View (cartoon, rainbow, N blue to C red):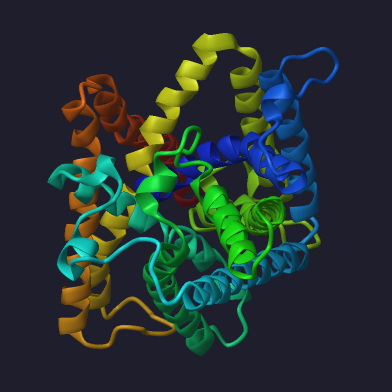
Amino acid sequence: AFITTFMWYASYIIWMVNMSSGIWVIVSTAIFGNDLTSKLSLFGLNSTQTMGILGVILMIAFTFIASKGLNKITKITSLGGIAVTLLNLVLLFGALIVFALNGFHLAQPMESIGTAFTVSPNPNYLNSISIVSFMVFAIFAYGGLEAVGGLVDQTENPEKTFPKGVTIAAIVITIGYALGIYLVGMFNNWGFVANRPGVNIANFSYVTMENLGYQLGLVFGAQNSTAIFIGKIMSRYMGISMVLALMGAFFTLLYSPLKQLIEGTPTEMWPEKLTELDEDEMPKNAMWLQCLIVVVFIIAVSFGGEGASKFFMKLTLMTNVAMTIPYLLIAYAFPHFKAKDEIEKPFVIFKSKTIVKIATFFTVVTVGFANLTTVIEPATRGHLSDTIWMIAGPVFFTGLALIIYRRYEKVHLKHLKEKLV
C-alpha cells in the first residue's frame, strides 16, 4: 500500500514541476491569443530561465494560499469547475448552431457509420498497438478523482454524497468526452485541422475553439476578418477557462496527495515536523517541503542547460506508467479488501460480490493492457530508450519507497523494544 501511494504521489510532483511553468503558455494564450512564452525575458534571462522563475513564483504563491486552509482551496476549485462547465456549454450550443445554420451538414463527414466510429482521422492512431495505447489518455480523463478521495473526511454526509459525486463525475466525463468529440465534428474537419502547420496535441483544443468562433462568425454572415476576430476571442476564452481549471486542479493536488501520503501512513515513517498540523488543520511543514522539492526541480531544469532538460524528459517518461500502475494495484486489491469483514467500512458503494468482480476484471484488464501497450509502443517506432525509461520509473520509485519503509520498520521496532523494556 505504501509503495503504491508513494509511486502515485511522486508522479504528481513531476506534474507540478511541468505545470508550474507550462501554465504560463495557457496564460499567454488567454491574454494575447498566442503562445508568446518563447519571447519572454526577465532580467536578461532567456525564455526557458524566465519560465522557470515564473514557475517558482507560482509554486510559492499557490503553496502559501493553500496552506491557509481548505476553504481557500475549495473556493478556487469551485471557480475552476464553473469555468469548465461553461466552456462545455459554449461548445455544445456553438456546435449545434453551426450545424443547424449549415443545413445540418457535418464538417467531419460520416459516409460510413462503421468507419466513422472505428477509424481515427489521426494517422498516429491507425494500428492496433497505438489504438490500445490511447487508453492511457482515456484513463487520464478521470485523473484527479482518486485525489479527491483524500478530501472525503471533509465532505458533508460522505456516506451518501461522496459515492454519488464520484458516480456523477464518471458519467459526466464519459458522456461529455464522447459527445464533445462528436460535437467538434459538426464544425471541425479533423483531418484538415490536424494537418495544419503548427497544430499539435498541446494546442489542438485552442485551435478547435478558435475554429468554432470562426465558423459561428461565418454562419451569421460576418466578413472573414470579423469571423477571424471572433475566433481569436473564443481561443482566449478557452485559455481563461483552462487557466481557472488548472488552478483548481493545482490547489487540490498541492494538498490531497500529500495528505494521503502523510496522514495515511504511520507517524513514525516521517520526521515529527512533517506530520504536525497547524491551526488550520493543514500539514504546513510538509507542504512547504513539497514546495521546496518542486522549486529545486524547476530551477535545475530551467538553468541546467540541455543536459538537465533531457534528464527531466527521462523523469517524465519514468512517471508516465508509474502514475497509472497504482490504479492497477488498487483495483486488484479491491475485492480482497471487500472480502475482509473484520475491516470496518464506514460506507459501501459496491454491495454485490459479482459486481465487484466484474468491475475489478475490466479495470485491471483495461489499465494493464493500456500500460503494456504504452511501454511497447515507443519501441515499435525505434525509440527503445523511451521504453526502458518507462520501465525504470516504477522500479526506481518502488526502490525509493522500500528504503523509506525499511527505515520506518527500524524506528518502529526500536520504539516497540523501548516500550517493552
